[in-house]
Image 1: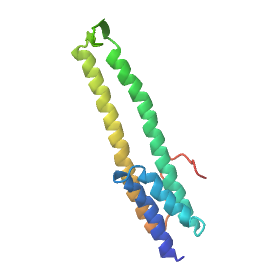
Image 2 (image 1 turned 90 degrees about the vertical axis):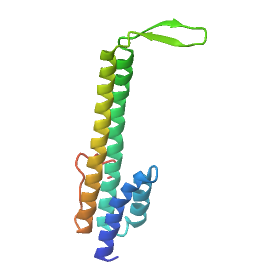
Image 3 (image 1 turned 180 degrees about the vertical axis):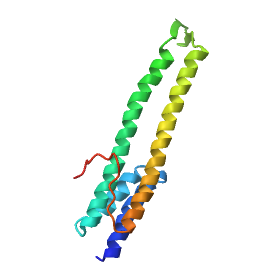
Length: 151
């Protein structure tokens, strides 16, 4: 395999993670397919493939951690100052004391969670493009704050 072919394959590995916007779980499937088919042929492709997959797994972990924090806080803020007073014959709940103050806390939490998720996705997109450019120049790029799941 030529040096330019190695650069192209490494670039494709990084860019294939952007398929997540078209194909569900494409950011895991396509880089793993490309990396596993070419990892034995080149150390450069192997290193870039591991970095891209580890970054995607790290982003997934960070997203799950933020959800594990946000969802219980969201549920707690909804039911913090509310009381369920009556259950009607139809099984309907009447929730009292749901004031504007409670709703504003819920809205702030929801906005912060959405902003955090958007920030994470924007940073992910920028870093993928940056890593692709580095790979096309023949440099191995190590994503910041990446956990090495695959060594």
